[in-house]
Amino acid sequence: MQVRTVRRAANLLTLVSVAAILLGTLGPRDLLEPATLNLDHRFGHAALFASLGAASALRYAVSLRARRFSRSSLGVAFFGFWLLAAATELLQGPVGRHPDFTDWLADMGGAVAGFLGGSALFRLALSRAVQPDPPPAAREARTPSSPRGRRRGRARAR
Image (cartoon, rainbow, N blue to C red; front, side, top):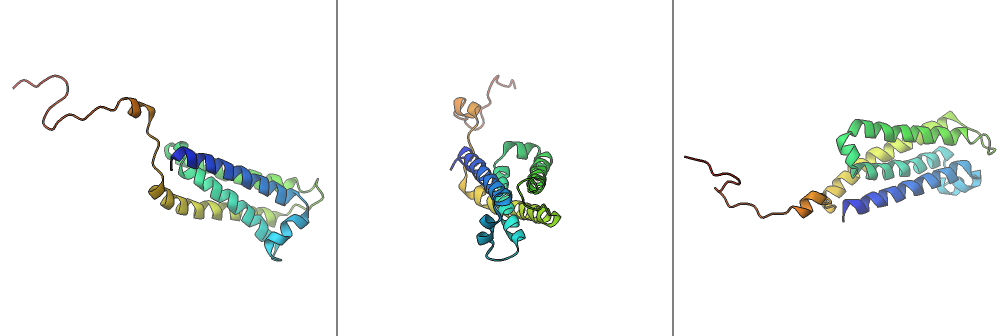
C-alpha cells in the first residue's frame, strides 16, 4: 500500500467524521440516542470525536509536514478539535438544543483519546504495511553503484 493511498483514505475518514459530528450534535436529539445504548449522551459526543481523533491520527502518521514540523502540526490538529467542539456547542443554541460545557469536555476528551490511541496503533501498523513513495528525483536518476574500491570522478594521484 502506498502512502498516497493512506493519505486519501485518512482525508476521507476525516470528512466522514466531521459530517457525523455535525449531524449528531446539531441534528435532532433522537438521532444520537440509539448510538449511546441508553447511556449518558456525552458518551455519544466522545465517540463521535474519538472517530475524528483517530482519523486525524492516521493523517498525522503519514504526513510529511508532521515529520518536519511535528509540534506545530500537532498544535494545529488539537486547535482544530477545540474549534470544532466549541463551534458545535455554540451552534446548538440556534437549532433548539442546549450548549453544555461538559459536552465540550466530552468532545475534547474523545478527540484526544482517539488521536493518542490511533497514533500508537497506526504508527505500528503503517511501519509494517506501507512502502514510502519514491521521490521523483530518485526514480529518474537511478544509476548502478560503482564497484568497491573505485572512486567516482578524478583519480587520486599517488
